[in-house]
Length: 309
Ligand SMILES: [Zn+2]
Image 1 (tube, rainbow, N blue to C red):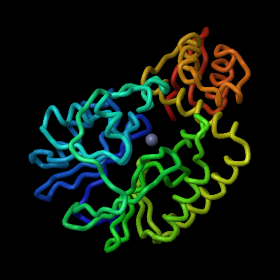
Image 2: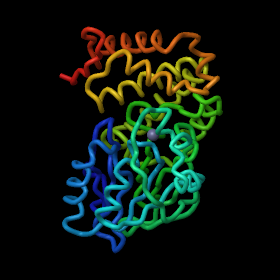
Image 3: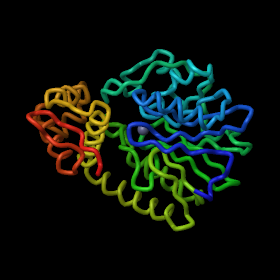
Image 4: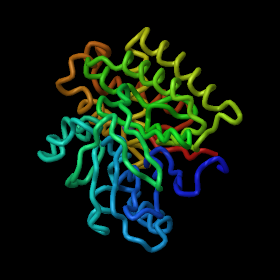
């Protein structure tokens, strides 16, 4: 995108791995977010290319979901880089609490890493010779942050705003408010009036063709629609989690799906109340949903990933 500054490089990945934003020319070379662990070889190669032979000095995470922090450990092992994490997560990372870090409930993998520094909302960090403000972005994840460069009008929005939508409102699944927080995060973005948004997934988009305003407007309607019935967010969450697992495994039996559903529901009264069904029945229903949207097909009780044509 021509409206992006030359001091940063956006490496666009898919849905299993988040995008990486690389600042290769600073004294402190930095990458924002590191993708999912099973795509680690690609991450290593793409980031090495972007760094043009330089050593990576720092990883900065917008949040610690497995698709944003899954490459932390391998990049840290390779480059000996620092890792800066969002606020409120240091204790969980120190103790490697896989339950509260979301990896267990989502049946996702994230290799253990050590952190060096905790980001604070409001603080400014220097990236690519520019000052970027750390902004809170609760909703999808209570600890998530975004990065805003006022001078360039560029926002690194993580999973708070994509060109089409935003991340699942995960706190609500555990009975913790998240809809109002996401709505407030969208209002904060609107007030910034970004010229360009670099999302956590998908291509950057620009206000030059009205894409930022359009994305914000669609996101506002969506958060309103989701907040009217918590089951809508939960259905979406299950679909996203199963689709993610299917991208990783390529094939999943209905029994494996049911196992995944039980881990997601374990000890979660809010989810149980929304789905008064056995895990097998929920798995079968979700498999049908994935088939209906063309993400998978069911063959003799095995769900097989369907690549987009
Ligand atoms: Zn996320």
